[in-house]
Amino acid sequence: MAEALILDAKAVNALANPKVRGAQAQRAAAILQLAYQKRALVRVPAPVLAQVCRGVRHDSAVNHLLNNPGVRVVELSRTAAQQAGHMLARHKLSSAHAIDAFVVATALQFDTAVIATADPKDIRRLTASFSRIGIFAL
Image (spheres, one colour):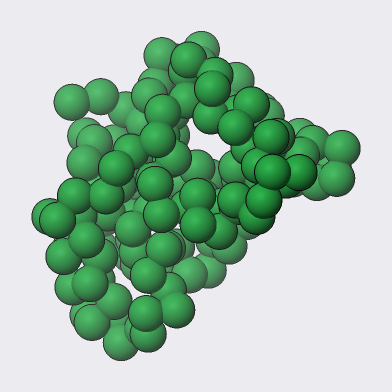
């Protein structure tokens, strides 16, 4: 397997709407550029799209990012979904944190991964026992 950069919803929004997101967009662009330089895979878990797709007007910027050949959407497998559910149970978190758990489960599909997020507290809680996953706070 390879190294990967996993983008959560806030990272996708920051990259898709840089004029609106300011400093977050600059940090997201920097980690994306570093991922490209390191030839890391850049992935967006499919459930993240439920958080960022809000209609044609908003979706065009997201689609522009997702149409970049270096960025791929990862479908949610049964294994990853169950793994996410187990994480939620282990940490006594409600299903309100499901998409965060899907992001972490996606990261676990790679030898090493970094999750770009503006919500490092929740992601850190879910990744605490996985040393091969890093967190890049936007």
